[in-house]
Image: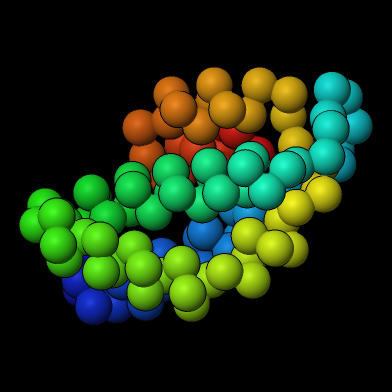
Length: 105
């Protein structure tokens, strides 16, 4: 099991991978909007921070701001990539970042 500090440094790479994985694989795909990319990123952030035990609202808000600043370019690069048509529903149903990446992207 990874130490908390190690996990905090490693998990944003998952967000980067997830956002950049929105590529066309055929089938029913359409271009991702900024809102789609924000939704994926925010959901991964929320799931991961929850799994890491962030419960204090002030600390959670500060950590979200830091990570959004640090990984803002991920969202910009995601826009226009191909996504599943039911992405929003799938993202909302995901119970872990791993499930989101596996099932939704």
